[in-house]
Length: 169
Image 1: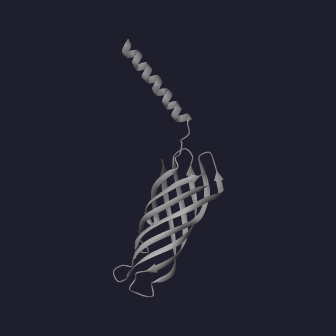
Image 2: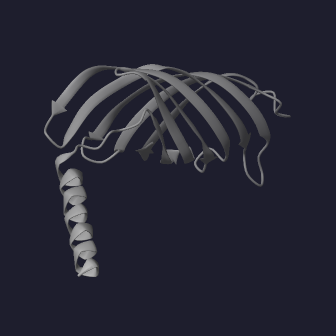
Image 3: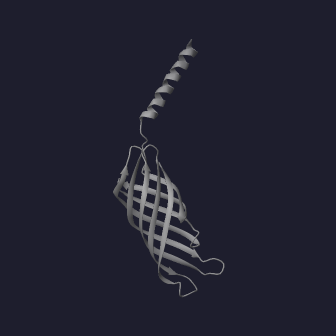
């Protein structure tokens, strides 16, 4: 009899917790980590400071340019393009910085690059799961140095673009 009563209590408590999961919305944390594909391809993170302001960063390889890149941006989310029960699509813009070790390949020359980024993107922000998917493009004004070829050293322009996803804690 005691075993039957204990099983009944466990079943009722199991049903109650399942109902709580269905009825509650997912609380999304302010720190997200994930992957980015493009220029660069690697890992990325985003930390929300306010509802409409965040710091985002990525670290990875640049397969088109041939090198290793790290960048960080301070982004604002000034416009909500679409809002539904399941997701929100805000646009974001902001300034940032980029550092890159560029390796030109077998026949080329390597150099180091430091620059300012201007990023713009769209964010597909899920409401029921702690996940977002993004697409972005960034223009980079950079200074190149350390190359043996004097024509490479100096001021230059570059373009970054990426598609990624982040899970929030």
